[in-house]
Length: 297
Picture 1: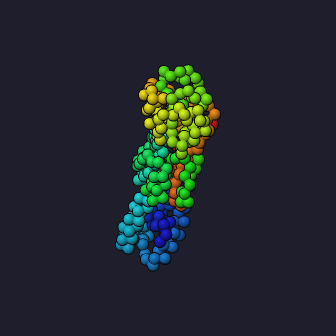
Picture 2: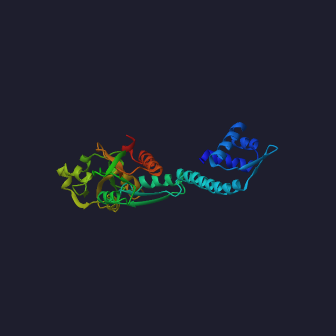
Picture 3: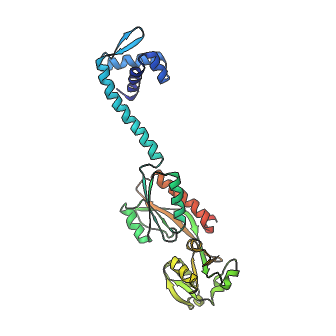
């Protein structure tokens, strides 16, 4: 018996007549009669006794109906499971985020994702790029948000936005009176610098007069902001970190003519994405448009 035959047989058992079964299935009465006759012929069983327009199920029909009900319950469970999966129930998403995106962009995205899929489980972890590569290739994470490109044969990345550089300092610093800052205006400032292998470090290294004023070197935008908030100097950091830190302890201004850098959502190249992962990428794009001016550009 195929599923359609099972459906007709079950409807006849429930309704007790061909007419009522047809009404239950929203089909014609002759169609139900033909299907019922075909089922009996195919099975080689008499399933009903016909009497005055009513159908009386035989013991064989009752035994078959018990099995049919078990099948129907399984079908209902499948339908419910499909509905739950569409809503994210029972699904999990393991998210990695670079430090600067983990301050505001990814938390915004995760927060909105949790509202859209309230029964899904979401795991978020901050990682550097080299750790992202290992976890993604080992299937220990589903997706990563990186501010640097990742070149690996097993991974693929999609650009979801951009970020630029900003200048941070204490709110009482004279630079706070400006709407934007140029690198030339930092030549007499105590600079909190970054190592040369970072975007900030490469930019500063192009200007010898700035490098000479660097007395403190860091690798983290958060550390640079903390030092600037304590009056240790002026720092050029990524705007994602600067905006997340922006408070009464720290002022932030755009760096004039700053180069923009891409933000990537990275995943395993050979693994299909779940609906939850696709929705997360959309939320990251929305968060970047809300947070990063470079992303809007």
